[in-house]
Image 1 (spheres, rainbow, N blue to C red):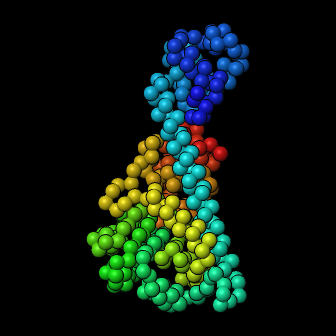
Image 2 (cartoon, rainbow, N blue to C red):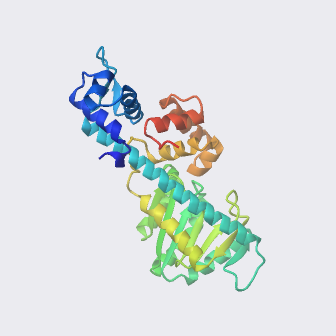
Length: 330
């Protein structure tokens, strides 16, 4: 019955028997359940792996089963973590596909009937974005990674943003959670909110991206330096996929004015994202870029997580996190 929560039939039978007869050891449970002792031990191994049994302090009893209420919370929390990880993998796949499209589009020869156009340098990018904004009739959606923005850039963006909002254009933007700690950026985000724009934050973002009216998407050709160049994509299928990527992130992002919620294990979103990046073997510098924080802050978050997990390496941190149900096991 509990196989949907990751508990196989034998392990479930052992768990139920332990609840009713907590004094029984392996031999007694085997006789009660008409199982071999090896089968009972395998069931105990699975229950221990899922943290549904703990070593018993009572002499003669190796394990004790946790209460059904706590067990269900543990199993559901594990499934939620697995679903979150799967969602992150889906978003990462979409982001990788989007970046591949952008990079390959930049390599194609210019063609008047192509489904993309190339932009070179910051001036050309700014001019094209301004034209897209001026022609927009419905909505502008944006992923704004990179952490804190300069005061000058923020102030320069207010006039065009105000013009869009005055024309009734819907604006939705996702920033990184880290901007909540940078007052100039936070002031700008507050300004956007008070003028009718919708703003949310996420611990990480898959790619820098602007979509106008769900018909044109602008992506950088180099994720390390968005000023080098960009591509404007307007193929219906490609833009639809990028819109789906935006909606997926938007639906899980935290609205400004709300505090990002911890996961079922009590981990804030930024720490959960750091764990995933640690498990993937990313360096502190790469983690810092993903989170929009300084390398020093990334090192502090990673070191704190590794200490809490009792890990001496990033690989061990990922393995221990999976063991504790903080991340799904690979």
